[in-house]
Image (cartoon, rainbow, N blue to C red; front, side, top):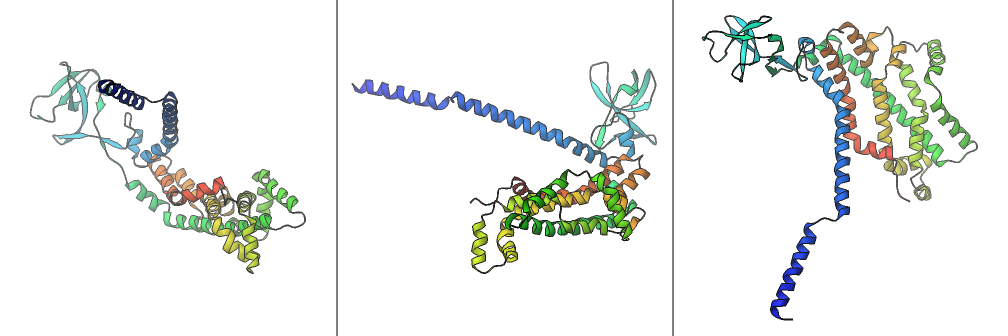
Length: 368
């Protein structure tokens, strides 16, 4: 092969290599398309899920006039006005006969003909416009009403309600963690007669409707004089519940028993094994249970309603907001502001622990 032939072959080979590198195989193009479609679906789903929250935030920053006035935008906004001869005239977008649209101040409104003032040249003669001014679009400016949150803070004694809710949620969460951890550890690691039957009965209580036990439970608490206090909301948390016990037991069972045996050889008691061996590896499920119960207790309305009725000083945010909504039902902005204020602490707690929370739900555990 001559030098010229070898050069042509080399150029042809490099050209094929560049062509192969520049074109993507059909399989890779299909994977890219599927990835794009899945991402698009995820974005649309998240947007649809967050849209009520965004609307709630917008309402919380609006005044009553901004909510009830027709034609207002979705965000909190006030109409822009122009001061003329001691009057505040609204600015409107007015289409003129020459095809242009100008921002003019409405001076004399009329059904078929209105008079406008040019804000840039107020000394010029007023402009007559044929048509109904109500069909024109206002000029808006962003005007959030942050004072709504301050009004809610003062009107419903928010600090007191916040303290009551946080105290009940934290104390009951501690009780749930202590009791459920011990019960789950017993079912996961100890063998005793009737263990399977007892665990089946425990899980069966999940399917028991709460309405069935309301009257008997209330009667018991009334007989012992606990109605009108926090005790019916706190004491049951120290006696475990089936859902959290099941979640923690399943996680504990993924931890190898060889670790327990190694701790026993070193002289550790079962309780010491739980503290030093099991719990350090079970933080994800512990945090998941804590978040579950914290959010449940924080949002609980029915329990505080029947056990703290008539005792305003010990009621929670849920009852305080319900009472506030009944009084200020004509001001949706204040109602939404109070609702958002009640969500701050649960949302912050979830954001700080979401990594552990997700791991606890998946129940990964330790590989054997």
